[in-house]
Image 1 (cartoon, rainbow, N blue to C red):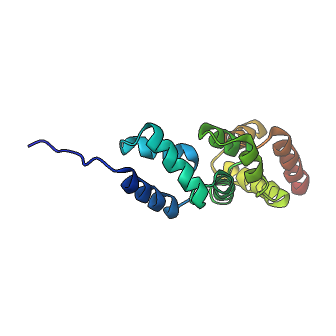
Image 2 (image 1 turned 90 degrees about the vertical axis):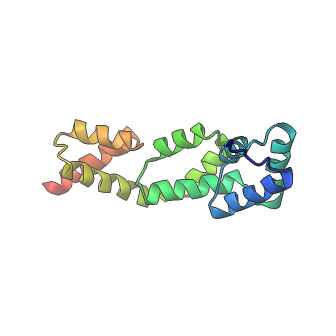
Image 3 (image 1 turned 60 degrees about the vertical axis):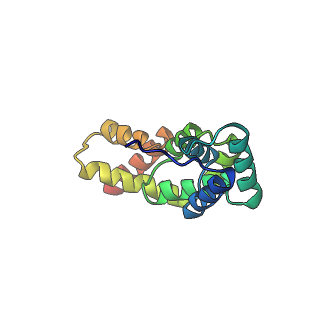
Length: 156
């Protein structure tokens, strides 16, 4: 027996996308990909995205701000990694900049120091290894070096 997939009407697809966007913030690319997997293409896809934007269900600046807050506060990522990930999701430069505004400079520096301690606890001994670990997490090398110098100064 063949398993026939029910064809979604544009109205049904719109309702699914409202729920999808209500569950958590989404970027345009995620919604577009989801619609394509549901078999919605062309003009119907574009109209659904436009309506979601008009209704306020889909807002890329709000998404970039929420994404940045989450990745910074929970995963302790740096600005470089956050920016690369948002670009991979085709988020505009304007929205990326708005998202990065969510990061407090003092908290950012503390996150670097926190990650240095994590790197040390993982067995990274040299400043080079620690720097590599932090750069992989998306932190700027100048700030990493500054934080390492502060830690060395504090240790004396």
